[in-house]
Every structure is written in structure tokens, then in C-alpha cells.
Amino acid sequence: EAGVTQSPTHLIKTRGQQVTLRCSPISGHTSVYWYQQALGLGLQFLLWYDEGEERNRGNFPPRFSGRQFPNYSSELNVNALELEDSALYLCASSLRTSGRAWADTQYFGPGTRLTVL
Amino acid sequence: AQRVTQPEKLLSVFKGAPVELKCNYSYSGSPELFWYVQYSRQRLQLLLRHISRESIKGFTADLNKGETSFHLKKPFAQEEDSAMYYCALSGVTQGGSEKLVFGKGTKLTVNP
Image (cartoon, rainbow over all chains, first blue to last red; front, side, top):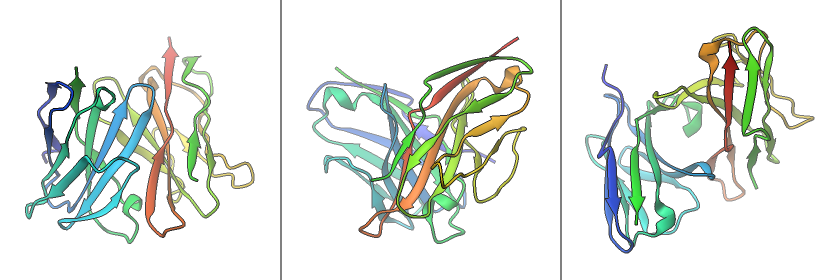
């Protein structure tokens, strides 16, 4: 069974630009989560999508947004890039079996490494 | 506010020695706690969660509500346990939404 896939693997952008990251969940999984792993800050929750709807959002500014498509794949968009957006962006998917998002096991992708110059 | 603290950024032990990775949390409600692991060149993956009360790869973790801790333990460390370990907490905020908060991680090195 194919795992969670993310594209691109690496990305270099300059300040002020916009970027779109993509994630394909494991087949049958309806929930997609996005995380930012910045150096020294650990892993921080960004967004959670389930059945095409945004269910929860972490403490990030509105220039971080995303969506989930009918096939459950997802995009993360970051506008007006800042230097501190440089990080590894991880996507995870899960099969919703319980009422609480994080009670379900999440399966992580390999990440997209974003560098903002 | 929910907070997870992993006081040790780095932890080094010898093979066969006991290992304990510390995790302390701050949360006023009833939390769900997890340990995630990332081996070198591999993806982040769930190691165990407190509600399952299971032992995975010889690791166990007990939720101590009195000490607000969820330390990860293994009696005899193996070289293949070398990895980055993250403690995470899931809880409901005052506004009613769920949040998942991760600690900053502990890098465990098991020396031969």
C-alpha cells in the first residue's frame, strides 16, 4: 500500500513569493493534517482537513491556508513568504474512526523542505 | 494553555542500559498523550499512545496525572532505538476545539 506522498521534495523561494505544497493521503483516508517543523521550534500543527472541510487550525497567520479536494488530496498555500517560513512541512493522513481527530493514528509523509531566501 | 516539555534535547546511553525519555505536560483537562518517533531517513510515526496502554518495541509510557508526566521507558536500549522522539498532547481548548501540541523532541543515541 502506498504511503502518504508529498510534492515537491524541496523548494526554494524568495521573500514575498507564494508557494503551494501538495499532499496525497493513503487511499481511503479522509483526514489530512499539515505540520510545520522549523529548526529549533519542533513540530507545530498547522491545519486539519476532513471530508473536504477545514476542521481545525493551529496558531498561524491567515497567509497559511489550504484546501482538500474531493479525492481527499490536499494543498497548503503560503502567501507573502517570510524568512521564518523556512521549514520542513509535513503532511499526515488518517482514517476517521473516532470522534477525536488525534485519537486516530496518523501516517506521515516525507515532507517538503521549503527554503525562503 | 496546552504545553509539552521535553527537557532533554539530547540523550545518550549505552546498549543494554535502561533509557527514560522525559515528557511533562501542562493541561487542565483530561489529555490524550502520544509518543512519536522518527528514525534516521524515515518518516515520523506513532510509537504509542497512553490510552492503548501497550508496549511497542519494548517501550512503555505511563501517564502520571499527579506529576503531569508521560515518560517513555525501555529497560534495555538497543542501537536501533537511536532516533528522534516527540511527545505530543491532544486536548480540547476552552473554545471547544481540539489541539495537538508537540514537544520539541529528544534525540536518543544508543552507543554500542
